[in-house]
Image (cartoon, rainbow, N blue to C red; front, side, top):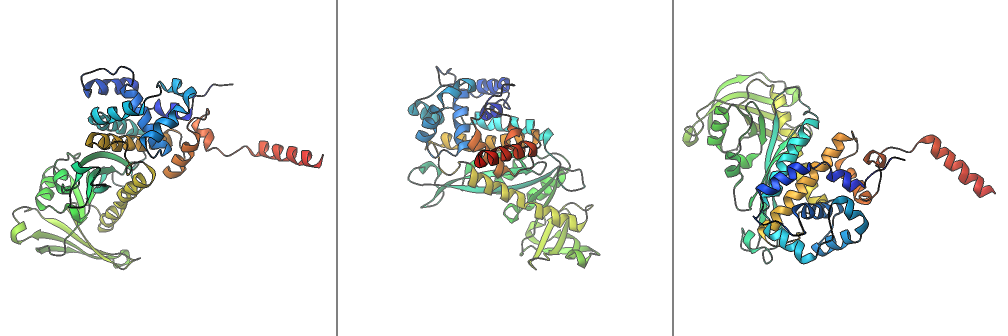
Length: 385
């Protein structure tokens, strides 16, 4: 009979140890750990994410209960105080770098986006993770509130987070957007919160396309109008130039598309610098931006980024980046094993079987009909006996 390691062991093997050790040396504290190494810390944090442990004490105790399985994971039991010190002092930049390397590893397996064009498609948005002001005073951004902001660039090839940055909640989204270096020819979709005409001009000079919403108070003049199909919900397709005070910030021509949602009847006005795609495709690109909202909802509902195992800024950032690493590992398994289940179903199944010794595909393959019928006949004969 072929030997199988535990499901958790198979997941951890997806992280190359030589890459892990190299990043550890680059983002270390200058002192080598005596027993609780960076690998031990990472395994503990990933275990807590995948099993939904609610506290530091709960995570440490749960792993100690699986003492026989820890040897094959390359870890040892740890004291709660030692784990807490590691989360507070070891730089979170290590997990940020590991997240970036894992994204590059998963990306070749990801399916392409659903549109016909070959340009890379991204969605850009940010969400606030609320914190308790009395426990996390370093994250205050209002008189009675605290929190951090997750700036995310979602790659629509596989719906993978290509870039995530954590900042104080008071920082505006546009400031982080200006620092992004997007690939030439790519398309980025953003909502009204990213309205910055100077940034639009910079993207155009970098040959990067954007699709966003136009503000209702925008001042412009129409230079050209094109025919549209009312059956597709299109009302207008125009070439415009900004006038007034914003004209100097963005002197380039822009494309303005008015679209009426056939379901809600809501009228939406889009702004883009892409003139070759059809107007309906531009509207569909912005609609596809909803995937980043689904991403935020998934990590908040299914991963541990609301209850934290440490109160310091470094501990919070480490836990969030490990949650994103767990997200990438789930998609990595989904792509490698060609699983058709949803990401939520995959996570819930793994939570109950992390220490089971079988192949990951066996958790989702339906039972053999012949063996099921044989078992049913045996049960029937036993009942009649």
